[in-house]
Image 1 (cartoon, helix red, strand yellow):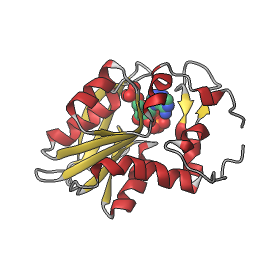
Image 2 (cartoon, helix red, strand yellow):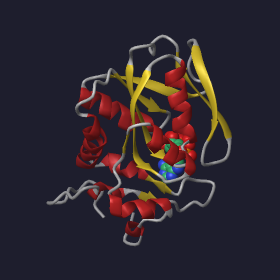
Image 3 (cartoon, helix red, strand yellow):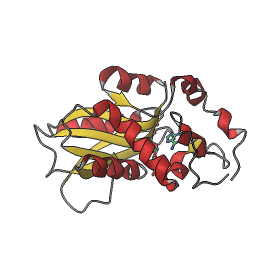
Length: 200
Ligand SMILES: O=P(O)(O)OC[C@H]1O[C@H](OP(=O)(O)OP(=O)(O)O)[C@H](O)[C@@H]1O
Ligand SMILES: Nc1ncnc2[nH]cnc12
């Protein structure tokens, strides 16, 4: 497979077949979406798909979640002509922070944090991450934004699994993702048909 090739006809979600299956076992996520970012058209189409539901909304700031959410988040911010706020895993920011504990698909307890001097009432934030599995990470980010008084305009990720937490986010916030309806069940089963023809 030529990772950098662009097909003549770009059907919805064409770039999802660039995502790589896990070959390292259960300590890791079940797939790695990040190869699609290597293809400039794939990255552009993915970001456009994530932003299209919010085209009529006012977004003041895009916030992306450490680490892989920085890539899509910063791309989305640039595309919107807005700034980017990093929501970081704990222990990296050398300024005053608000923090939030959470657990994610690994089952581990984690903490994320963000600086105190940007989010405030009236700031409308689009939250971006690479993937939503249990929803623990995104829910913690939502809580951080809201604790500081800012407003979550929406939530965007390549995929939102239909877990309890994923459904809670879909039920309570405006959500955009890149998964065509006919592929959602594959995402929920944590196995994509495209893995069969995947070659590195
Ligand atoms: O819905 P959840 O179960 O909470 O999982 C989703 C989170 O897990 C992944 O990141 P990970 O922590 O693996 O880190 P990375 O972005 O550094 O790869 C993903 O990018 C989300 O941030
Ligand atoms: N990047 C990712 N891919 C698949 N499942 C995930 N769960 C959490 N992060 C994930």
